[in-house]
Image (tube, rainbow, N blue to C red; front, top):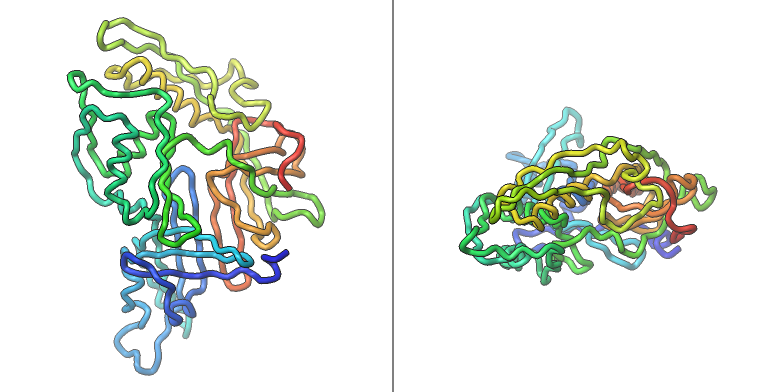
Length: 382
């Protein structure tokens, strides 16, 4: 295929706030790249450089003195597979690690960083948001980071409307912008992340439901002869993970006690044998907590969000070769698995992908999740 003919190339962009392709000395010193894209935490990167000195470099390693590799320098990692470029991550350096080494050429500089969301997590604030829905608060906060995003955010209105009445309560932020946005998402069973687009320095922020209705990516093939593209694959079933909620809440206006209960996940199903139904009656149940100041709809929304987050009892992990796979496996989307048998074949949600790139090597390790066993469709996208 075209990707294998042209090979895989990497472009490193660096800059204080506006990044440009890195100069030749930095690129030549780059020995390894690792990028982790995660649906349940920050995306991160790690760049490893070989440190060296010339005859005139008496004071220090030139690479350490380069301002492009200082903390909070912007980093964009772009991968070309064939003729198509993809931006893996757009972020900022947050950590330096120097290992001098005792042999010539053994000294290394490792820089670590996070995606652009790290800029939302630097300062704690205390701000009230009177008469504003959660999605309005998110939109207002993200306006401050328009320069780093470069594209209008996608904000999905909460499925359970919440317009606070100013005489009853005034929502307030106490913490960083990122922590507050994530808490608002968690309260209604949503997720928040920022992904780079194919255009460098243009990122798309998303606040909404988990993307479990996306077009599935090319299948991960196990034990299928020449079609095999996965070098390792294992799965785990955690019967203690699925959790329902059963309890009471006191309605704040009337004082009446109302039931708060959930029975199953409301996410789009990926398996015909969900753990929450197969395990009945042996499913963990917890009490409804922190619901004293909430409306009944809000209390139920938080309980359902907890049940949805806990529903993924099946986890699959493995590694693939990027050239054999013929592309990039993307986190926060669906992917098909084939060749493992009926109970483990089918569609999964890609929870995490770690890209490891060296000269002549490109590996991707992955973690997949879903709510149960079995293939919900007879075929997957090859």
